[in-house]
Length: 399
Ligand code: AMP
Image (cartoon, rainbow, N blue to C red):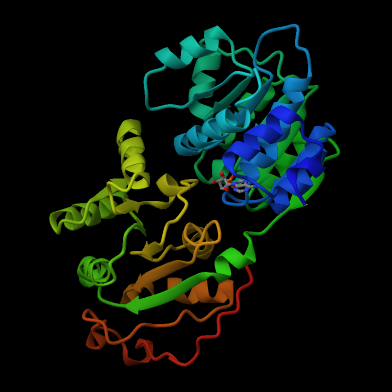
C-alpha cells in the first residue's frame, strides 16, 4: 500500500516523497483515514512505530484544506519531554513543507522570550510540554479558543513523570467541541479513565513494536561485578570496534561517571539526563547524530523518544527495575531494517531484574562467558551462580 491510497493531497505526498517515505507504517495505515474523517482516536503505540506521522500528516492536511478566517492555534500537541517536542516539531516542518501552515514548539528549561515572539506572530500548530504551556497560558500568551484538534502524546509517560495534573489543567481550558487524538504505549487504569473522559466515540488503533524489528536484535548478557562494569564496557567498545552505542544507566550520577570514564579512555562520550541543561542535552544528541560522539550515556527518562537511525548497539549498563523498560531500551537499535545488538550487564544484585525481564519477554537471553571481567562467584550464594544453558539460544518473543 502506498500513501496515495490514503487520500492524501499533493502537498503532503510531495513532502513524504522528499522524506523518502514510500509506504505507510501499520499505525499510519489505520490512523490517517480515521483522523481525516474527523474521528477521535485512541492510539496504543509507542515511539518508533511512526506515530508522529500518523497524527501529524492528517492534522496538516485537514488544516491546510480548510480556509480559516481567524488566526490562532488550530492544533495543540502535548508531549512529555523537550526532546520529543523538538522531534515532533521537526517532523511537522518536514511533512508540512509544502503547506502554508505555521508551527512552533515550546518547552521549559530555556528562556521563554523567543517562544513568546513566535506565538505572537501566529502559530497554526503548537507542540508543547505541559509545564511551559501552562506557564505561558497563565501569562496570557497562549489562546486556545480556536483549537480544533488536540493531541495527547505518550499519556502513560505523562503519568510516570508526574505531569498528569498539569495535563488535566490544560484539558480544562480546551474548547468542548474539538477532535481529540490520544496516544499511549500502555493503558493502565488511570490512563484508560482519562481517555474515557477525553474522547468521544473514539476509534481504537493498536500496534505493537514491529516484531521484525525486535527479532533482528541480538541480545546478550554478561555476568560481572558491579565495580567492573565500566572496564567491561570499555573492553567491549574497544575490542568490537563499536561505532556508536547508547548506554543506559539507572541513575544520573551513574551516567556522568560512565561518560567521564570513557572520555578519559579516549572514547568520545557524553551523558544526557534531567540535570543537564536543555542546550547540553541538544548538543550531546547532535554530536552523537553527527558522529562526533561515539557513546551517549543516558537515563531512561532523558532517552525517551530519542530517535537515532542506524544505532548499532544498546548497552544496559544497569538492568532496569521495570522489565518493560528493557524492551523499550533495546528497541532503540535494529531500526529501519538494520540489525542491532543489545548487551546487558548483570551484577549479583540484579539477578531478580534479569529474571523479571526474561519472564515478561518469554526469552532466555544468551549468556556470554569467557570474558575478562566475570562475576566473582565466591561473592554470591552458590545457588545463585550463573548456571545457564549455553545451548539454549531459543529466543521466543512476545512483545
Ligand atoms: P515515530 O514513531 O513517530 O517516532 O517515528 C519513528 C521513525 O520512523 C522516525 O525516524 C520517522 O521519521 C520514521 N518514519 C515514520 N513513518 C515512516 C514511513 N512511513 N516510512 C519510513 N520512515 C518512517
